[in-house]
Image (cartoon, rainbow, N blue to C red; front, side, top):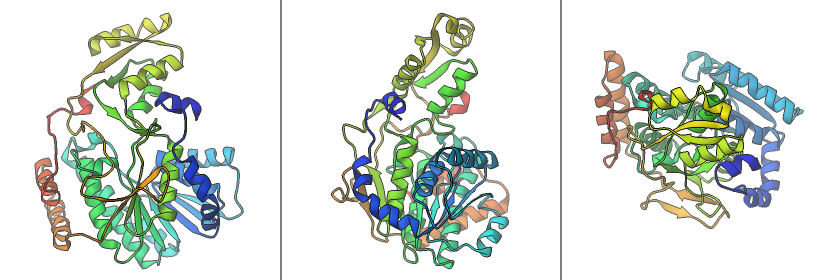
Length: 396
C-alpha cells in the first residue's frame, strides 16, 4: 500500500479516520446482513467484496461476467482473508440475461444490493455498437436490477457512478449521469445511494495498469503529459462504496473531499515515478517509431523509452470535479467524505422518451453514433461533448 501511495504522490490513506470512528457500526451492520455484489470481480467490485467479507456478512453472493476474474477473486480472498462461517458464493453470470433473472427468482433476497458493473472507458464511444452496449450496461441493466431489488424487498441499493458524471464531456460520463436520473426515479420505491470518485490507481484496463503490462511485454511506456487526475487506491474505492452503502441516506452521492492528501497528478509524472521505482531511468522519445525502436536496446542500459504527448482524443476532460455548483453538499458529516444531497427530481416523460428512442433504434437494427449523441443532448442540454474524431484505439 505504501508503495502504491507513493506512486500517486501520497503518503497516507484517505478514509482512515472515518473508518475508525464508524467501524463498530460497520461491523455490526455487515455481520447481520446479506449482500449481493454485481460486477464484483472488477477492480472496484473486488475491493468492496473484500471489505464486506472481512466483516463476516450473513450471506455474500458475487456475480460477474468474467469467470477468470471471479476465480482470482476467490483465490485472493482465501489466501489473504481465509473463510467465514456463513455463505460466500460466486456466480459467472451476465446480469442482462434471462439466466440471471432465473437466478434472482430462485432466491434474490438480499438486504443490500451493490452494483459495480460498468463500461468505464472513454474509448467505448468510438463506435455505435459498443456505445449501445454501454447504454445497456450503465443504464438499463442498472434499472433492471433496481426493479428486481424492489420486487424482492431489498433494504438498500447502491450503484457506483463516476466523477465524470459531473458536467460530463464524454458519453461514458453522460451515461452515468443519465443512470443517476433513473436512480432518482426508483428512489421513490427503494432506498438508494451512490458514489462518485476519482480514477482507481492501477485498476484493470486503466492506463496505469498498462504500465505493468508494457514492462512485462517489453514495450514503451506511453502517457499524456497535459492531463492531471485525482487517484484513489483500489482499497479506498471499496471503503468509499461500503461507507455509502451502509451510511448513505436515500439519494445520497458520496465523494472524497479534496485535501492535501488528494491532489491532482499527471499520468506522465506517475509513469516517471513508476519507472524509477522499478529501477529504470525514463528516456523521452519524439514519436512512436523511435519508442518502438529504442525498446530493443535501452532496457539493457537501465533506461526505458517513454512517449509523453498532449491529449487530443475525444472525450477527455480538461479537469476533474466531483460535484457541480448547483448541487447541495453536506461536508460536515464525515471527515474526508463529502455528500451530495438530492431531492427526487427527475422528468418522467424524458426518461420514458429515452427508453422509447433507444428501443426504436434497437428494433430497427441499425443506428448511428450521432443519433445517440443527439439523444444524450436531449437528456442533458448542457452536455459538453467534445468530438475530435480521434480515439485512444488510434494510439500506441
